[in-house]
Every structure is written in structure tokens, then in C-alpha cells.
Image 1 (cartoon, rainbow, N blue to C red):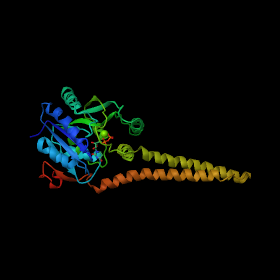
Image 2 (image 1 turned 30 degrees about the vertical axis):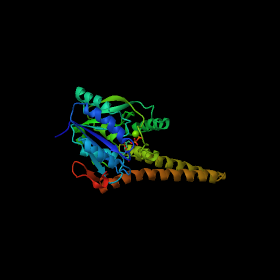
Image 3 (image 1 turned 120 degrees about the vertical axis):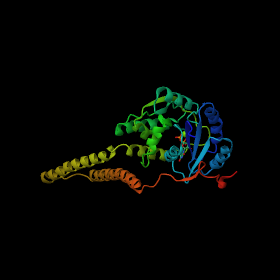
Image 4 (image 1 turned 60 degrees about the vertical axis):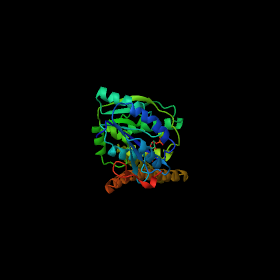
Length: 318
Ligand code: UDP
Ligand code: MG
């Protein structure tokens, strides 16, 4: 039987929040008055997450578990969940209770009342995020919208509801390293949003260290804009004009007898041009790497275990 609602929850080493999550999520879902399933995607956790999930599954019929073979990242984990989810509507939710489960009811109501395909959870209050995270996020979204021309709500994360049609469309996109918070709006399904207050992580630590955030930002730009490549072209063009001027200056200096003073300017130019060249190579490399990955056609995750398909996994028996 197809449930009305699937809730996809990616989790990586979330043994500390898992009991709190179940305790808070289950009454909310049971109270919705709709049929539902929870798809817990264990993103290759190394702690007790898998064991706990097996245990909860015994007493919570609607809980399904999909375990990935290795840690594949937040976006890949959500993608795996979207492929596994059966529901007419699918909500993606962080495991750490930063996205309040109670908001799911609002999302469903808005989807029904307004007849939209996508309902974004929009963070009306990010005061629980650190100042650094808020400010870097703001700066990133402004650069992103300038480069891609996309008007993405900077305050929408990965807490959203999608209709079956939307999920099917997302699943049909074979793009590597896709960042769902930009891919979904780009599909242009009718959408609405509901505000929610971003809460503090309920327990444990963030699984998003700074470098992972940087890589997510790079993927978000590379995936939607060719402008960085054009930027490289402009650098090259600018460098060419500058070198013509410099040659003219040197030639004139040679004939008018003015010796060209000092080596600081020479060294400076070499460093500047060298740096720009490396930067442009790096930009090219990012695109090339993405094309290479796409050509390999390797999946971005492998499923090790799916409770809908496999029998209990004894390695994680209690
Ligand atoms: N997550 C995941 N795989 C990863 C990193 C994170 O499935 O490699 C999950 C994590 O368990 C959580 C969600 O993605 O449910 C968001 O991560 P987190 O709360 O650590 O990020 P933050 O809120 O600090 O940005
Ligand atoms: Mg979090």
C-alpha cells in the first residue's frame, strides 16, 4: 500500500539524537491522521545508529531503514531516501531536530489547500546558528544568485515537502554532486513556503565541518553557472591587455634611455600572473572533474541494506 506521506531522514553518526528524534517525531506523525512511512537513511554511520534503528524498527512498523555502504554525504543520503520513498508526498528532514517535526503538518496542509507541488520550510529565525554560519551563508547565497541568476530563498535549507511528481522528476535527474536545495526550485513546480524556527541541534555535533560547507558551495555554483569559466576568460583577456601595455612601456623606456627601475614590479607581475593562471586552472579543473565524474556514471551511493527488501542484518543485532 502506498502511504500518503514519506519522511526521509538522512543520518550520519546520530546515535545521540536518535532517541530524541523518535520520541518527538512519532507522536507528530501518528497524530496526522494520514498513512505514513519513515525512511531512515543511515549514511554509513560508524556509531550505534544502525543498531538503534534496528531496535526501533521492531516497535515502529512504519520505520524503514536504508543503509548506505559508506558515508556518501548529506545530499547523496537524501537522494537515496527519495528513490526509496513511496509516498504521495515526501518530506526531507534533518535527524538532529533542527527542523521541527510539527511543521510537517503545516506543510501538508499548505500543499493540500494551495494545491502546490513543493512546500519549502523557510527559516524565519536562525538565531540558533552561529554568527559565523549565518554570515558566511548570507555571503554565499548572494554570490550564488549573482552568478547563477537564481532567486533562491537564502533561508530555505533541505527541510521541504515534495509531491510524487516532483520526487519522480528529481529522481530522473542523473546529475552528480547535485545540491537539492537548488535543483528543486530549478524544476519550477508550483510552490509555497511555510516559516519555521530553526532549533538548536538536539544532541551530538554538526556533521558539516567548514570544508564540507565550502565543497557544497562550490558544487552549488558549478552545478548552475558557467560564469566562473567566463571569469577565467576575462582574467586572461585582462592579463593580455596589461602585458601589451607593459611591453609598450618597456620598449619606449629602452629607446628614451630610461632604465626600468627595480625588480619589485617584475616579481610582482610574475606572482600576480602566476596566481591568476593557477586560479583559472583550478576553475577549469572543477568543471573538468565534474564532467569526468559524470562520464564514469558511478552512482553517488551504494545501498548495503534496505529493510523493505532484506532480512534483518545480524551484524547489527542487539
Ligand atoms: N548527514 C548525513 N551525511 C553526512 C553529513 C550529515 O546524512 O555526511 C546528515 C546528518 O546526520 C543530519 C543532516 O545530514 O541529519 C544535517 O547535518 P548536520 O545537522 O550535521 O548539519 P548542520 O545542521 O550542522 O548544517
Ligand atoms: Mg543540523
